[in-house]
Amino acid sequence: MNRRTWSLHSEALGRSMDLACWGDVGEPVLLFPTAGGDFLECERFKLIHVLSPLIEAGRIKVYACGSISSEAWLDPGAHPAHKAWMQTLFDRYLHGELLPAIRQDCGGYDRIIGAGASLGAFNAVLGACRRPGDFAAVVAMSGTYFFERWMDGWSDEN
Image (cartoon, rainbow, N blue to C red; front, top):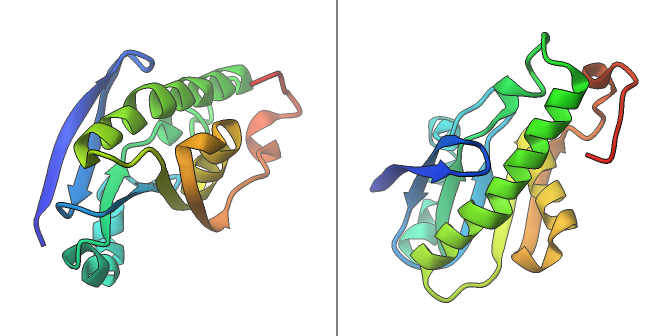
């Protein structure tokens, strides 16, 4: 199965973010990577292979995005405020840059399906909770939702 990869420059994050796509037409599905994963882990872990009948039939068009987890949640030297701020920037990227790019690439779909495991599940759920109009559905597998281990008791509005 053919895969397209490219980088999308993010003004919100101040850098390029990797993106991959499988399929030509179909309802858009965005896969968020796990905590330690990258935008191609879904292919290495055979998820794309499992989804290939739906992709090849034109039922879905699958996208996989990069992550900021290593610079935020997984960085033991980062202050909790930085971790939360990085997540806020990622959310700006998701809603203001990535989803519009996917909509343009798909031509005609206003809402997407978000999916992920671990921190990818968190990102899918958070994206849908913050902007439910952007998502048709969310599939959250073995999600990480409790961040106390990374926050040392600190919290703010982010």
